[in-house]
Structures are given as C-alpha cells and as structure tokens.
Image (cartoon, rainbow, N blue to C red):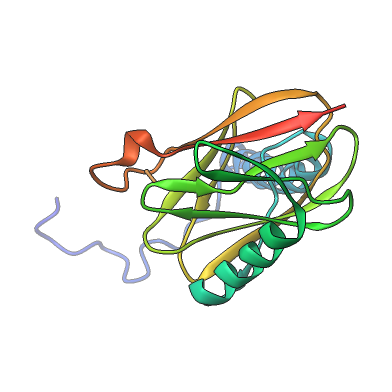
Length: 177
Ligand code: CUA
C-alpha cells in the first residue's frame, strides 16, 4: 500500500530480470545507431541546409550587400537591383520588412557562398519550388555554399510571420545557363 513505507529501505535494489536487461541493451544500441545515422544523413541524405551562423551587425551586413550591388548590378526590375555576382563569389541576400534584396542572377553549376541576414525582425527564407528553408535573424548571418543545378526562376518567400506585410515579402533568384 502506498501509505506505508516499503519493507526494504533500499527498495529499488533488485536484480534485473533477463528480459528487461535485453530490452535495455536493445534500446541503447538503437539509440547509438540513430545517433550515428544523424551524422550519416547529414552528409549523404540530401538534407536541408547545413548553414553556418556568424554574428554580424545589421549595418555591416547592409554594407556588404550594397558593395555587391554596386559592383555587379546588371539591371533593375520593379525598382529592385538585379545582381549577377561572378561564380565563386560571396553573395548577399538581405531580408527586411517586407522585402528580399537584391534579385540575384546566378549561373548554373557554379558555386557561390551565400550569406543571409535580417535588418529588423525574424524572417524565414524559403526557396520555391525547391523547398529550401532557413530562419533569418537580425544580428546573425547564415552562410552556406550552394551550387544551383537547375536553370530557372525561383521565388523566395518569407515563411516566418513578420507583420502586416508578411505575405508581400517575396523575392526572386534567377539561375541562368
Ligand atoms: Cu518576413 Cu514574414
């Protein structure tokens, strides 16, 4: 009965039944397997982005972005600069209420170092229709290497609610041959 103390003071110190021991070992080994699968899928599972994150002041990130725009702007679309940075270079995409800037034009099968950060609130980078997603925070830049392997026009939408203009926060990335 629960109202009376157990007869033995060290009531839990009982020998483990064989079947329980087997289950503990099975669960432990399975846990270990899943742990190493995590590392395996990271490399071989075509998972979503493995981005690096660095601290950066929003003004500093804006400077980097502006420098890239000044250097590699090729035209404008609806008042937004279209930028075509050379293959292998650092590419910046800036998120702010409620805009992705600039429009990027990248070459197919070329690698780029992609940097993203926010000027104000949390935004969500979602590349459509390929469904690549990452959160964008002010004060941090998310960095990853990317090699677009399919030419076309891609949409960038914001998938973190960021206020009244959230649904209008759409950007564009071109991948050209
Ligand atoms: Cu930015 Cu929602």
